[in-house]
Length: 187
Image (cartoon, rainbow, N blue to C red; front, side, top):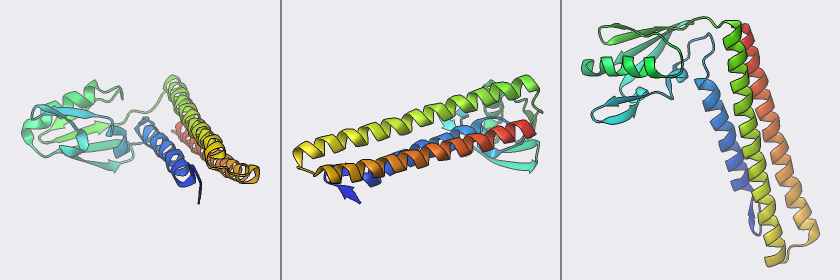
């Protein structure tokens, strides 16, 4: 469905992108459970370039509170360990040959509150991004009304469509945040 100057599919794609970005941000938030995605933000300086960790090692979760990072090239082990230690995740990696074991410490109450605040901030940034997409969609509609001589009914119909998408994605953000907050409390 697309109104003259408004591509509703594009509006939805951009809102969905904001939501996917939030999911990615949340995956990187350290809770007390091990998750390979926690290490996604980490880059390692190897071969004269900064590479994502998952391009120099495989990451597994053998236990709920342990990550194993199997470095493919033994010469990169120290660089991987250094990158993990330097990240803001507060992890304490231990080298065992080409394998790096990362125990995931339990969260104290202070850390839980901190993580909840960060999660809330990410969620709010996503809501703002979704509202910005809505705003741009509405601007496109106004231009279309003038340039393409859309009727008021058409404009209203497309505006309603954009608002429904906005409401749906904002609701999704709230749901994902509530789920993440429960996860943070349970740990």
